[in-house]
Image (cartoon, rainbow, N blue to C red):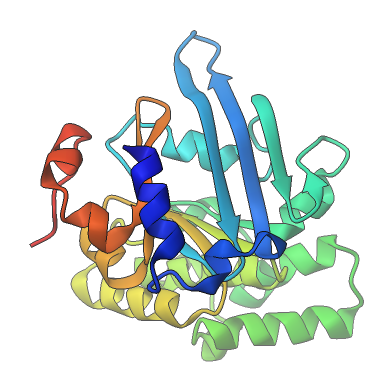
Length: 259
């Protein structure tokens, strides 16, 4: 089944020419396996490739392994297998560079916002990269512009709404100018207006993205490619429109076709 959808993905104009160019590869995961200390096998030989400019949704029921996979991509967790970002292996020695290249936005923005002001939160990453002050300021201004939060620079992060916090959390990652933007359940906890605003933002950001979500409407609206995980495995990887029409496949892996 997975191979069939890979073939559809390769030839589909919705995904674009980049899917067929090895030169554009920005992430490769090869046979990744991971078990937690209690013995739970969370990943069981996961392999995938992400190419420059792709916007890919990672979906599956709770416990499928999505978050565990994401935490491997910038070295927070370490399993067996091989992960390459650009031309760099994800190893202990390469972690500072890998974490600048792979921008991870957690589901709860309070896990990322801890400074007194929005400006300081967004400046935190560039400062710890050792960049000069004028470059840090330039990056903060640019990141806040990208998420349409320029007027919030002096605001207190913990006084913002959930939707505003999520945008600022994305800005904290964008200020490091990553190669890949990775988000865990970005629409969770948002009211309808904030959700729509976030969807529009993700549509507009000209970046390679991998996003874990249960929001199948958002997947249909934004992501040309969808990867389905279940029980620590990738069970399908292909064109979103094609996979969305396969209701038997979706139901078998705890998913529903959006109405």
